[in-house]
Length: 306
Image 1 (cartoon, rainbow, N blue to C red):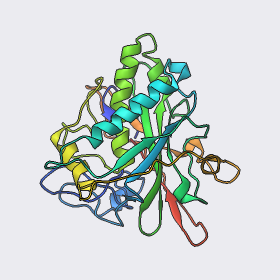
Image 2: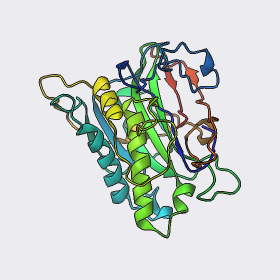
Image 3: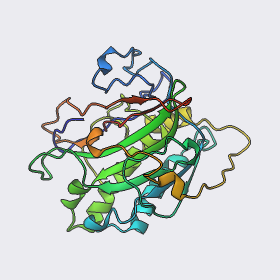
């Protein structure tokens, strides 16, 4: 999304949806892509074209990129805790008496370029989160200017839309503006992480201006979920008996080995934008779609504009 000024402008990828609510669930045709205007949409404005993007498994494993938060005063343990809390917030909502049916395990910090996906070994991927300096920031950045706050890059197989990796980058330079206030850094980082976790799980931008997953809103620390957000995650991962039992997947050198797997160049990605309450614009960074073939298993990597 293209920057505006202190509002969170975010985009996601998602899945199916209740028309009584405003949340959107992503499909392979992305309304926020450069050519997204051609996507068929329902009455709420959500894409209904192409296969829905679905996680290959409801058992997710993630890790943080080692030492990525050092320059903003956030340790690996602190970043891990913030990301873990974001997913636990989504996992603990009430879906008519039961939680959504997914589980997340957290591995030790890893060394990996971001975004990164091992297309040769799709089952061995884990989501990696990092605080990155590689964002398309304006020449001058202040708390009153627009910046891309974060971006989630889902990678999925064609033609079924099965997502096997979704890495998340958070904007280091934007966080550095709050470096002298550790509580502010962590509070705003928690809000961005909660939103991006929704994207990583599969939620798209909501049409409800009050929802956490809405594409633009006033920045505030520790923003929580709304009824629309809850409805979205429950539609995406409806509770089903028996209870989900997941075996944590450890990070392995093969899954994060750049000699065996290719990393996405940073300039390929879009991101989430912070914009000013009074000067927000409808512009946004387009999602860059890269379609490649992988032997008998074609896949697509879609850096998302958030």
